[in-house]
Image (cartoon, rainbow, N blue to C red; front, top):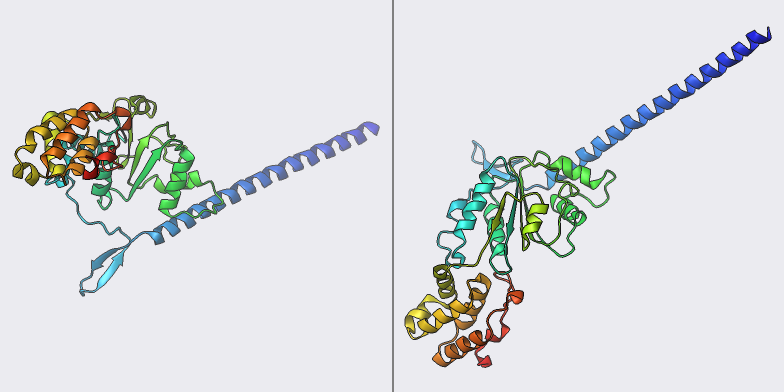
Length: 332
């Protein structure tokens, strides 16, 4: 009898333990299902908010009235003609064609553009932005100036802000970004990248789709290699003699050189001293466009020869002028 009592007691505790394990597994399954449904609901809510925030495309129906669809309002843009008539972009056409080849390539999604300061990397990237902002190839076009200290978390915050995600999200923001952008055609442009940016940590899983492109500029070729595009990058160099002369002549004013032939020889000497840097050619050319006195041109030429453009002070095209003493004739 005592043996039978011990057996019943053991069986009771075994059944109790099995019941406990069963209840624990049931709780875990229910928790997982609730979490999955909750996360799915959060993502669906975010997608609905983004959908409402997108601009709509006007379309006339058969009655002649204006209706609206869920598509973007995107005008057709001939990106191949963007450089036609742009005298301010001398020497940029070869790089522009390579960027277009990359954007049309289905097997590559990451492009690095590297080169010294002042060779026009930012100008090229802004040209891409302006040409494709309303182009039907991409639903989203993001453009950010990176610089020192730019991190994946900062990129993630900017992407979420531009897409329209709220700041009070229950689900991880990186997961929502990854889901929303997974099947969307987008173009991400990062200017002046100085440190490695982990795109996957920002919500852009690698590799991207054929219509998901990332282009960044940097001064360091090693950044291109560390970002994963060692075999797919563009090195921008200084302008050749002819392109440098055409760019300087455009910024000075062609009519000025034609009206005052005695300026041409001095202008040629100045262009030679600029060493083909577009930013310096533009800056000095614009500053000298108001000078009509041959003495001013001679003084400017002599000054540039005494102090050639220092490479560590070269600015990107269209940014702050590296030679503020050329901004007025009072300096001479």
